[in-house]
Image 1 (tube, chains in turn blue, brown):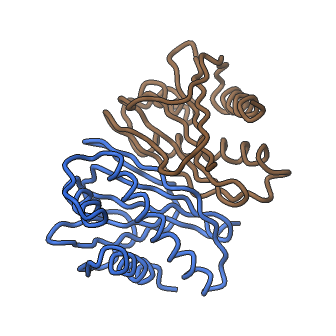
Image 2 (cartoon, each protein chain N blue to C red):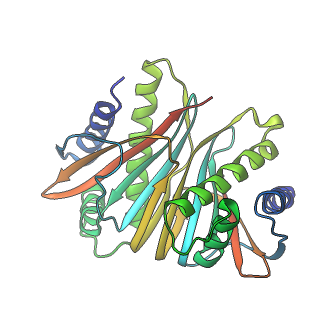
Image 3 (cartoon, rainbow over the protein chains, first blue to last red):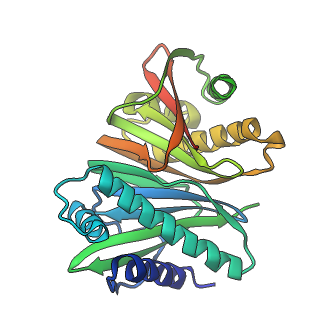
Length: 153
Length: 150
């Protein structure tokens, strides 16, 4: 089961169908490290056969660019539209991961996206979980999609 | 209303048994502004009810709780504090899911996650019913928030 590849495929599909953008993809990072500085992070919980947390970490410029492309207009600040757009990206990527886990015989249920916005915040997860993060580049700017998970007992 | 009562009960129970703190309800709120010098522990709820449960602790209180957990002096917001706050969110989630579904069997918990920072906003993106309860420990206040999809 290649979770890194599932994140890559699931994310690229969302960006080609919803934003008509071909993302450049970096190598999946397993374990700690590989943080990007984020001004907006949308997180969405996964439960049932797999317990997990999916996070989309975006610097401000990428978040505005994604939202602007989504809405077809220039976005000036990290407002409600940006939160909604990044939350929706998290939701759609999680939906694709749900399908991937299903194909591997694991049923998962999704929670709802929650978005954190600030100039300097730090996110962390439960120690002991598996962490896979993939950097993506859109028009020269990088954002990170991260999944932490473990098998439910 | 019933959910509110159970959230209060669950939080008081965890604080008295795990943290040895007796807490009182200060206020029930519908919204909160940006969080300052705070650490948030959150956990997703999936299944018949979808949502997020979160606890927002000021740094000073988070360090006091972690110190009491680990029986050692914690003086900064380090990974120990993140782990302790994530674990409290996990326990709250375990407690609250039995409120929302009989024996908790129709609700699945995600992994907990934590956020810390000098200032950030925390907001669910869907249309949600929000319950926010502020508690007083006698040594600072904190909030427990549940956002359930409508």
